[in-house]
Image (tube, rainbow, N blue to C red; front, side, top):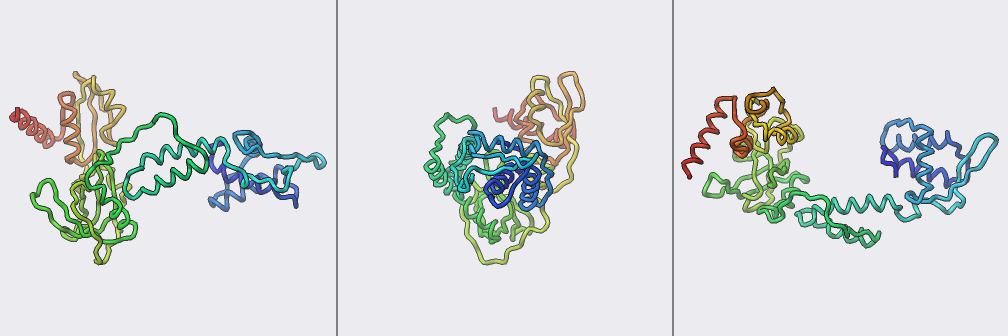
Amino acid sequence: MATNKHATIRYHALDKCFSNFGRKYFIDDLISACNRAIFDHAGIEDGIKRRQIFDDITFMESEAGWAIPLERHKDGKKVYYRYESKDFSIKNQGINETEARQLQETIMTLSRFKGMPQFEWIEELLIRLESSFNIKNTKSAIVGFEQNLYLRGLEHFSRIFEAIQNQKVLNIVYKSFKNPEANRQEIHPYYLKQYNNRWFLFGISEQYGTISNLALDRIQEVKECNSKYLPNQTINFEEYFDDVVGVTISGEEPQKVLLEIEDSLWPYIESKPIHGSQKYKGKTEKGVQIELNLQINYELVAIIFGLGERVKVKEPESLLKEIKEKIKKLFENY
């Protein structure tokens, strides 16, 4: 099955032409019909070429397609296309071999969500797909997704998810790591983000009047309340995390961070950058130097500290002092 853009739209447009015994469809007519269908569905003029239509017909006639019974009739020097029977249509056929394979891949992908709150319906859907199309994933798993279904707080995921969709204010009892006592606050929920296998809720807090970041595993209770919802009109969450590693936003301007990476660690850091701003700055006696441009936050410090003796902070001085202090406290613990 062709994987190029708008292939399915073209197949159904061609099917409609081949089924129409009231007129003759020559190749130029098929091209026009496909272009109109693409415009109607996508609002663009794709400009389909003759070669593409011939490739589409070849696929539709194949066993991987629908094995369509297509006839070619000569009319002078031109040829028009029509099904052998007025009753045939790909709409009346079962899924083809390629679609079955794609559906199987979809089932495998959907399976990663099984057990997640708000996605309980996927379990039923998978059973229906497997039953209806006799497709079952009997192979060993070939893709592994990092997911902790036993993480505390996931029981609140559904209610928070629905509150964001329906613009409902939430009354949340939250116990942070820093405070011994839980506190109750009203949150206007905007966004759910996963980082390091944990989920975080971002929204406006009535208590603080600013964007708050609440870890779901620290939430003890969630209830909807009747307060007027304040919609998000200022933050684009697709860009909100561009200047940070993780989920902690300081609000400060990004700053330059210089790190010296040992040669043994560099292939790993090169293939998996610490941050999108990472730049190679050149060789040093012990390895290479890289530059980051981002907000310094808890997650960045944790990553640097976790890399141990194979990375050294060169700039800024404030970050260097923070790392030194942590090393000192770690040494004192032992």
